[in-house]
Image 1 (spheres, one colour):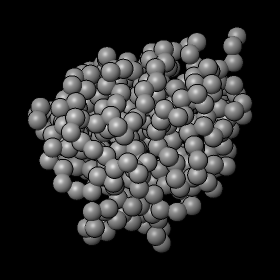
Image 2 (spheres, helix red, strand yellow; image 1 turned 30 degrees about the horizontal axis):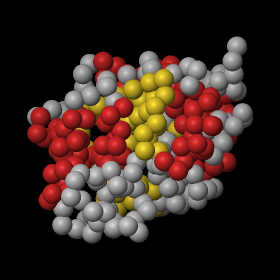
Image 3 (cartoon, one colour; image 1 turned 180 degrees about the vertical axis):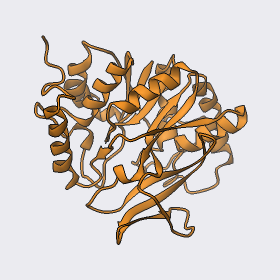
Image 4 (spheres, helix red, strand yellow; image 1 turned 60 degrees about the horizontal axis):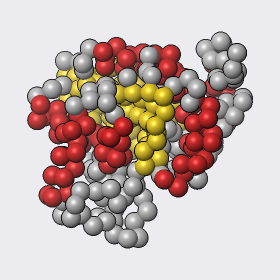
Length: 296
């Protein structure tokens, strides 16, 4: 199984490349902990989706630490890598979205795979849950309890999941924050605000996907651009939308796998110390070694 890590984001709110901000006691990054947990769960290959200009720094930091324990490949999310006839504005810098990122990586994926973000600390259990799901031939998404994904430092964006018979019925992208002790969600579509309970499931971009989706993606992105009539300077081709198109066309379901694991991330610069403290607590409990890749 392959672990696909989306690491081409700019990290604008945090500032700079937050993917390579040390969070562990021996300079480990968030990505290191995800890879460590994934290997423990049975993944044997890692594909990094990065910007080409960041290749050397990724390879000399993360790559050199893990290349002895797992197969590693790098692919570049390039805004020029689009179907023939599509012209992206020359002044555009921001990546074209998570769906486009995976499209750029299809050549490196030959087996069932998980997709995660480089910015997120997911915890160990979700990787094991994805392993079981992938082996069963399923398409799945990990649903975190929303209360386990919030920060004290401001509002966040979350994909709020609604389920039916154990499968995802819809995901509402929303701005989420605690207000007077309640969790209030404001849909990005402009629809009315709504409240959810602490254990309501949300997506943190952690998917289990079968390899045949890659062929579909190559065709779906062509259809997307062919029918697109919006602003090419700001649009994004998103993985959840592309996956939804595939599931509808193939009449398959997206299984919602719930976890009580605590998610941590660095949405704001002030989240960094909280994450470091949390990882140190897990080390003290024996869940992680103090040096993830120390050679024995």
